[in-house]
Length: 294
Image 1 (cartoon, one colour):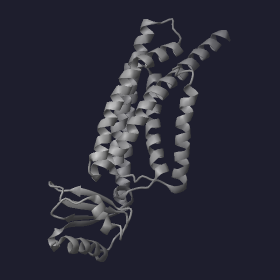
Image 2 (image 1 turned 180 degrees about the vertical axis):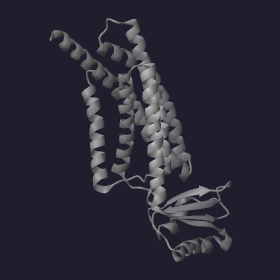
Image 3 (image 1 turned 120 degrees about the vertical axis):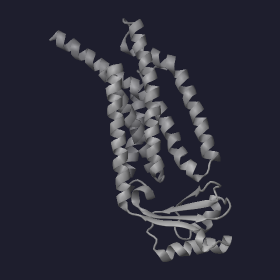
Image 4 (image 1 turned 90 degrees about the vertical axis):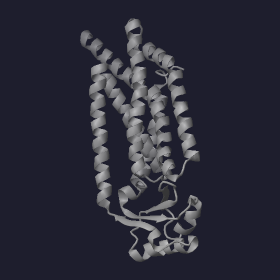
């Protein structure tokens, strides 16, 4: 496959997804979870492990969009997270439903807390700060290890991964929570690793074949790295998919954005970052040629 020749097709695929996602985000906004919107958390000790579907039979009467996770060492407690600001009467109504069905005691209401939007704002600020620090550190490292154009290409590819994840969440109205932020930071590291492997191959190929065009160098380097990159991604995806299929609810909320991120990161490493470097180097070459001609 001639990736450089078909680069506009690969760029267009990403652009379409991102544009649709941004439009959906502008119209409907992100489906922000309790970590960002504030709301109510209720933790109840059931005394045994029950399925999420069983919990929903009660919770859906009060909030069909509430998230439910298991907690406790024996997974015999449930945490109900809702964006609704339940008052004390409503909290006890929810607990009494469980109390009556599972013969609980008053002390089995482990905790009930209300979270205001301020906590969501704090999480957003910390997430943005963490991402900014990571991006600056990567920019400095890649510029030092390779060259500035490699660094710019890598950062644009990382921005692509984040935008693809946000777009998918916006299009399918998937709740965005604290796990999403953790997944983004994880994917930034995963994606940049794949990208650097290919960049290292490009640098090595340039050193060994100085007379080859940029197009041939990039295509040859990607072909040499392609099997390794795909095999690594497939192995990672299989593991995360198993976690998503077999894991409990609190594992699934982390696994889902990781699945999306691994796919986006693999795509950007092969079809976005390296072609971008080719575009930058070709423009630099043309600029030098025009300057000499003038």
